[in-house]
Amino acid sequence: MPPAHPCQPAQPWCLQRRVLPQHTDHAGVMWHGAYVAWLEEGRVEALACVGVDYAELSSRGLEMPVVSLGIDFRQPLRHGDQVTLLSEILDFQGVKLPWVSRFMGPGDRLMAVARVELVLVSRLGGPLTKVQRRYPEDLGSAVARLQAGPGAGL
Image 1 (cartoon, rainbow, N blue to C red):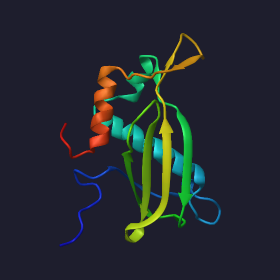
Image 2 (image 1 turned 180 degrees about the vertical axis):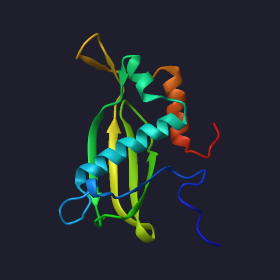
Image 3 (image 1 turned 90 degrees about the horizontal axis):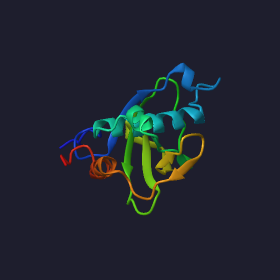
């Protein structure tokens, strides 16, 4: 029996992209900043799938900035490669929301692994922010759905 497609339910959150010319350097290798952009896109899309519109969250005075980011590049992605980004939330304890993402390239090869930690902050009427130790009920429920994965049906 062939393996399940990586974007089927009960799997990690999935984002599929193709490496385009604007993602690469002069040698046709994907630029490191493009990985970061795709990581953010994957998180925002996963939030949307569980009913959290990031723009609406921001309009409530809440943000989820990155406080830690690490990428382990294993093999280069190149112009034209089809890429599947598989992301999931690790155990959520304390104030940091940890994500791990795998960049899968041609032949389902692992090309890179990234770990990103976010915190929830509230803006206090200006540029000052305060880390939120407790999530609003709706956002806490959404995070539980994110942790369960797209096929959990919570």
